[in-house]
Length: 221
Image 1: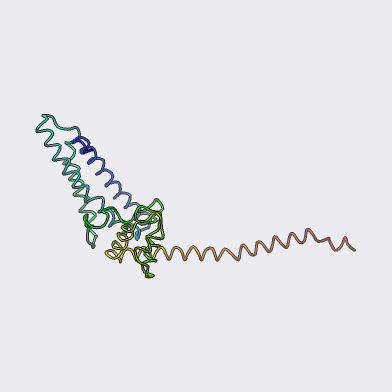
Image 2: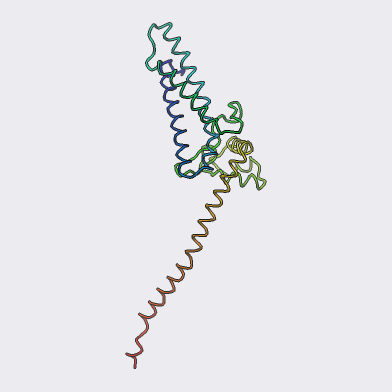
């Protein structure tokens, strides 16, 4: 069912607020020290920002037509110019340090190829398959078809979009993967360093238990 002019206006205002929130959330990721993850998602942000412009412009056209033929302006329509101005400001800010191509809406699924959870982990498509896993399999020689066939939650289009995004933004994605690898190595080292302590503690417990079970030598005499 085609949305009404009022529904389009309301959606445009809500959509623009969501886009602004996504940019603010991305800034928080950087503040948490996850700069590499933020740079990967920076490119994904344009998948939300660019369509939002079209949505707001369509809402403006519908609002103008409704006012022309209905005689009264639609509630919220007067906010659309300010919304568009904010989006322009947001686009300038997002493009300031961006050195890569913008997404082509006609290519792939048109949806963001990756997403990030609250722990700053990045996943492929709309799945829970990590970006690291897809790129590792791809670099090992697996075809997109083989990769998609290994996961029920990934479509072939999802995998193709992820690989395409990786090839167009390889520098920032590789930086993210290197950080992930360094964090994993640090965790492994911490676990290994803790193992001797656990082994020593087990040995002490075993020795003390043996003492309790062994009769005192003085009593035996």
